[in-house]
Length: 79
Image (tube, rainbow, N blue to C red; front, top):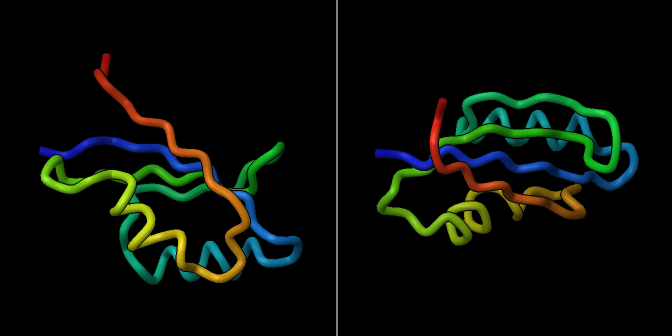
């Protein structure tokens, strides 16, 4: 089983495309979009239920240069 998680990512100015490229190379996401508004990228990923979500995101995402801030949204049920 997996947990579907959405992560919004704010990048340092001028780094969005580089951050997106670095995320894509790690192959941890299901979908990755550029967005308007407060955050620059929206990533959908599935995390194994045996993993700690916060640790997974810290270990696999937040060490990418250019990421300034993130906002994680957990999901519960699909309709």
